[in-house]
Length: 318
Length: 216
Image (tube, rainbow over the protein chains, first blue to last red):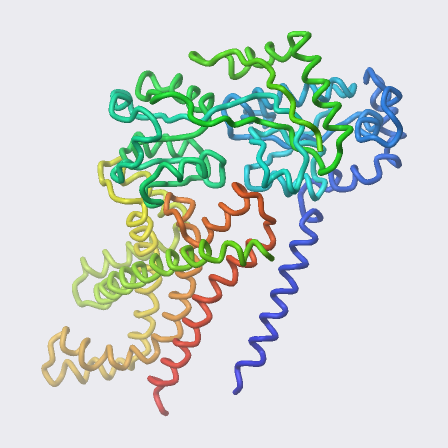
């Protein structure tokens, strides 16, 4: 029997199936209304208008055809955020996320006249943040989302709304030996971070070899490994590490100073300059009114050693 | 598609890393699985029981639980090793249960008369297994063992979640989320990488099967 022909047939079929699956990715999400709701906001607006009696702005404040007008009219917004990032976006027992990112999203939604009950939270792990924006599964992503040029090619960033900095966490007592990223050129020091995160890419240039780097999907696994002596250093943004240090009863310590600047931005559809500018104005107004600092103090600001932020200068919208 | 061309060296490194995991886990699981199969067909009840218990526990546990055990529980108990070796250990322990059953099915395919004949001419258990039963069993072992080996190659993709860095799937995740490339294209590359391991394996096993087939 000639086995070659059927195989190529099968391969071709699988490729076709894969491509189809990739294209239709949005269809098989559990969230069918999210997929449908965005495109025909106009058709649903009548129901939404009836429901959103308590919405302050009825969409009349915004220019016709803008994202803001659509969202305000619909009276609801879909926000992508992390569900597993303490202090920024961590789902509580009811499954509602809490944290600084979540508060920022609420401030933006509030400016559109959408109360927090009408926000639909969509879990967006690091790996799929561009994807959910491109495929219109969310209206914006607020998820410790570091602004960088590669990502800018696919989406537009509003903000930044916060400037984080990468640093190192070690077992208490070892901060005298490991004083900063330069110490990691010693090949015997093992470093842990999260797969696909910006810090995990930044740290590579300080390492003598890639074998020193262990990557997990969550920081908690890194912390467990630090406990088990499987790694010596956990690296990510300072506030996240401060959260772990504060919960550890003195088992861990921060080593050295921050050595990068990680501006967190709000991800929106590429080219939506009006929405981007609206978000920047909203953030500036929130800082003016004090709600920005309140949001910080209610979340990440509760951690010992965290510094009250000032709103960074916004990047130009493009 | 340019992401695949531009990062071909990363994919290549990931491919080699995955291959490395697979080769070590193959050796580990074949050795351990063969020992387990011997235990299960041996005339000593304690050995039989140990083998049966091992297979029952391992075959009915999810692989992720096994890998979690080797990557997090063993170090917590003071058994420290590189995550790479902990991962290979977990995959080997898991696959060994299936290898054992595949080999045992081959042994069971040898007519009982063969074993009785071997015993009756005065061969010990070891001799009858090594010289009479195993050479015949090996022929019917190839297809089921082949399935187990290919399943193990695909299972190796999960090791990246347990601290083993740099394998194909980790490379894919890195390109997607840190560097922002499109998921579908990157995973096409990852998929092709795994096919480049599994398809040749299947072809080799097919050859081997034809070579050792019993002409009836």
